Image (cartoon, rainbow, N blue to C red; front, side, top):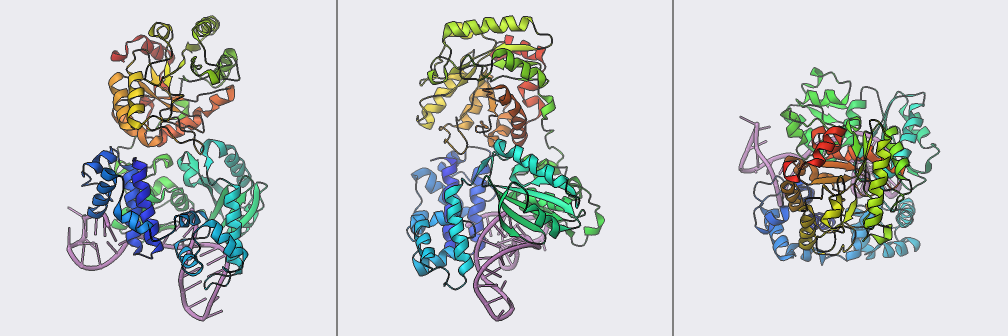
Length: 575
DNA sequence: GCCGTTTTCGGCCCGACTGTTTTCAGTCG
């Protein structure tokens, strides 16, 4: 049982209640309960077990009891009873574009459709088109949605799509009728994966712009095209929405479509308390005329708030902080001075030590840490002791030739199954620093994995912990760890935690960084680069660090070279 | 089902687009 399990059960209950046409506000309460579980800043699972959930916003008496039952017994009678009323395959129908609870309910009750396979058969036989409220077009759309789901994954990596986003932004900027352009939605907020793209433009000719948007070269098919919005499917399968508004509406629309939904709901209810109604086009209400709005920041100011950077608009305390003027001054890419976790041809990297150093210098960095794999990662050509010592020598030699730049000799040492390290202490002591990572035995229990990692962090030579959960976004689940305990252990042992900014990792997850920061744990933004191009992912890392509320002082690799050198020479207890 | 310096009861964000309608329901974001 994990935090995510708790949230998923609440969401499934919401869906089931929706299918039963329950009170929509009750449905929403379950959804908000799931959000509250996900966003809670402590060990919610333990608190649920202890029946200690009082005072958490969004979780009242009923959800408190249900979460307690679920966490302490692993099951929830209410949920199981609801589930038994519908076939399990019904859930996959919600993944189909254009199908919601009402239509699914009709399909189930009249045609006994209980899965995507059933639905396909019913459509092929023409049974769906004749249902009341349905029609030939709906049937065709459903078949298209089924085909689409089978063709494409529904999510994309943030780091994978940003070149495409920039291309489309550039094309929109050149349109003669468009004056302002921005990406919005989860992309602008820096979510690690996105399932659609939102673009916003200011124009006097919205219908024309929408039309033109559907003819961009990246577009594969048009989903909808109206006077103020258009939706298309790009050639890579990504859905992409455009909203066209006036110049005066633009800041409101940008705020609105950037979200998150949770952030906006909270912002709107705050506005209502001040007699202002806020929608994507502007303020209405008695005092609406009092505010001159030219950009997003003006909207927040009108509500008595400091400007909230898009990355932290998740309703996780940013609105309260903005009201109290205590928002963090978030880190910027320009503040990075170096980075630590990088590979070369010595293990599984594509480029040499010298090439990696040159690229780092071109990026304006003062130092670059080399951390090739250790010997147990034989699949990655990990270094055994003699090759590691040779690499240290090669780095010393290269350093002699650099001015105002330094390579650090490190290693990404495997954390073995029992928490010991792949090299003995006397070898590790010859390195400038060391990243410790888990690369095997992923299936330990959460307790075992947490103990394993904490034991590694207790080693004097372990400078930083690599990719905390080993997740590969959209490909491999994280291994189970207790984040709260790992953060506490990092604080105690003065071990830095890495923000691995390889696009498919982005690990540790952004949701944990504020907690780590508040415990005094330092972050190192590391690209885990396996080539010179990999170093360019630092910008992605900074976005995720911002999403985790990190400031310059929270990120170790903002420190200048001399400070990093001095830091490495101190015993961990004095860092 | 949750919540409360307008409420312990009566609210709970809201607009655009589509398709199936004969004035609107469902879905999406």
